[in-house]
Length: 226
Image 1 (cartoon, rainbow, N blue to C red):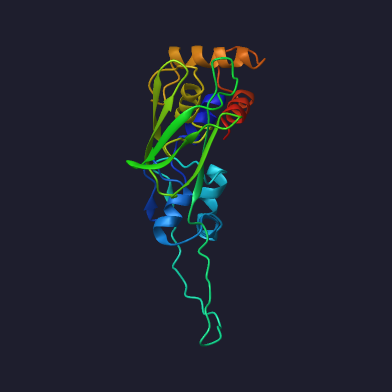
Image 2 (image 1 turned 90 degrees about the vertical axis):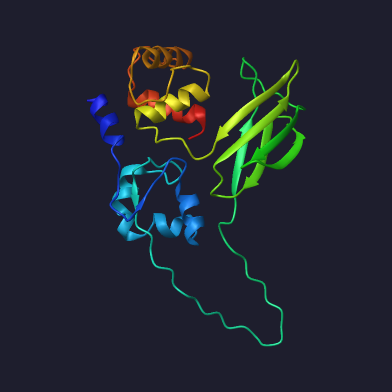
């Protein structure tokens, strides 16, 4: 029964004209079309997509989204005066936490963060090991260079490329991100994936069966952050 749920979640949801690509999320789609994410996500034509995906931040390539028509809005303003208009939904926030092998924060490390081949921040990690910066919603790739305690560390970032936790690929990607190596993210729950699931389950006081069940997905999502 669990495997049937995972397969169903790996099937594209929705029936709109826009086809989700790898790296897309509702924020990036809305940004490209001039909307705030909730406007598209809560549109009645996207009810089936919203029901199937639950989280607008994590879509599956092949999902289909209805893009509503943009509507003009008139605002009464006094003549010969200066007026300020604020555009909503311009930036998202990228948060990265540096931890050691025991899960302890790594504070005070100098880093350089590049997004889409541009340096966006050069600073020190916080007392909690946190790196935080605003980024454009349609950012696709990044590189984090950290001057570690012993050597320089380089991390390649694929922004928006995480599949829903209900899919096998979503589980595999989160396991790999957390250091539970399960090989290539290919959607096949093979030997490596089952071994990684067992290790994760044992570390989180779950029954170490190697099977991807609801309890395991909830713990994995909570540990990963989403």
